[in-house]
Image (cartoon, rainbow, N blue to C red; front, top):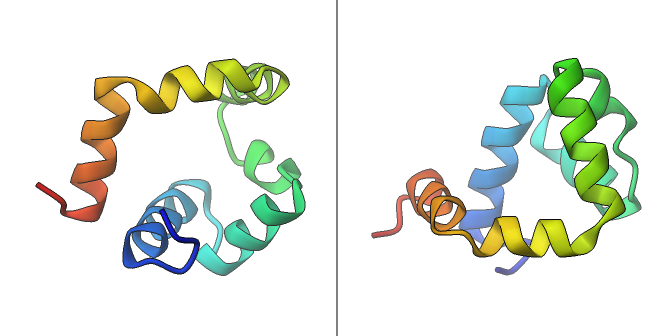
Length: 80
């Protein structure tokens, strides 16, 4: 997925709203590897899970390849 694709913009917008951040701020922080603002807006349990996932890239890869993640991506982007 291209960083400037409509799908990526939709995903950043959706996640940014959930975290109380603008899509531009979220994108910038993700590109810079800064997650402090995103984490502080999460529940403690979500924050802990996110930090564990960041510490293990294989977890992220496994999560993103799961059918549920693919379905969520298609739902967020309007793909069929």
